[in-house]
Length: 263
Image (cartoon, rainbow, N blue to C red; front, side):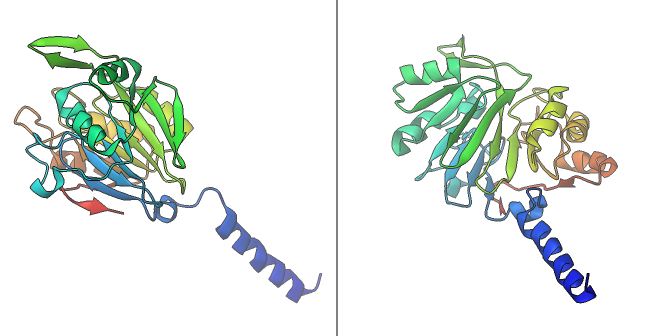
């Protein structure tokens, strides 16, 4: 074959790999996803098409949520990992105001329906739901889940985590409250999260050492620590997590301040 023709074909082949490969780096496919940390385990995620999602919207009584972020005017989706007050938070008032679908474990969904919510998506572990071009998978978490009324704990199903695959393929894993578990390797194998949001506070969840091991199992490209520093009992720190993550240089740690937004 003529060298000139061969050269043209080679260039075309390389360009085809760049533009059509399904496994572009997370730094490329993540463009357009905006993530705002609202303190504790609360996040606001905005998709490339402008879909606004809140996860565990504990805002008004959250000492770490900036004052200008405590009121929600727009929400297209709400995800709640379990029923504890520091995660269920302001879900009911936000959903009533915005009519955003609330995606929760089945029993917690029944509880919220009894509280008057009309737009509840009841799910269970292993299930996935696609809406507005976003695929949301409910996965296991090792914790507990209840709501407290008049001093009594009401069972509202098991705790969960969520894996969110955005329209452009960028995938985020919100672990909720959990201990480290071997399931996380399965999450890495099946869902290949680009970004993991992991608790590090200890006492109620993983500590920094266990969260660092979770990163080894998940193999995500990025990790954001959460659920720490809200109250003195949560003793895990971002500094300790950063130190331990030096053993996993392939994962970039992003320490976010409440109110901070990253893309």
